[in-house]
Image (cartoon, rainbow, N blue to C red; front, side, top):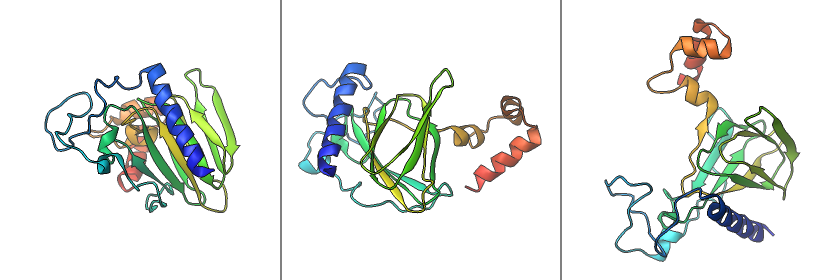
Length: 215
């Protein structure tokens, strides 16, 4: 059942890419990424030679090691780990959650995401640009979709570990955590901007920044 679901998710991600033009269309059969090139293009230049290994990875085959204070870890299977994905407009990821762990509110600026629950239960949701929350508890074998560019999250409120496989319609979808972006940017966002935005004081904004500095 699991391999079939993963194949279906990958096909959906590819077809979604064609419909929404998440990534530019490819102009040849393959263009394996030359990750060592210093040439700056939208994507990566093609390697002169490639092998089957450029299209394969075992990155998602086992749980990731959770070391973050969030209690979760994301393992990517994108163009940076599978160079053959260059120009193909699709990628995958695995997210592992400790009991109580969270994948905090974030966005993928270049992709819609569909997750499949390998095991465990998760409370998930996304927020539209009208500030409407769509959320539910999902269980093993269930899928859930997060539309492109919308803030979303997953939290394991259970007593046991949980894990999902994600399919995304971009070779490199990007991920921008809301809190980390605002409170741990380099150079930093000024305290007065954060204070006025979140209706707190500047000293309170600095205290929050200090927490992210030790994360």
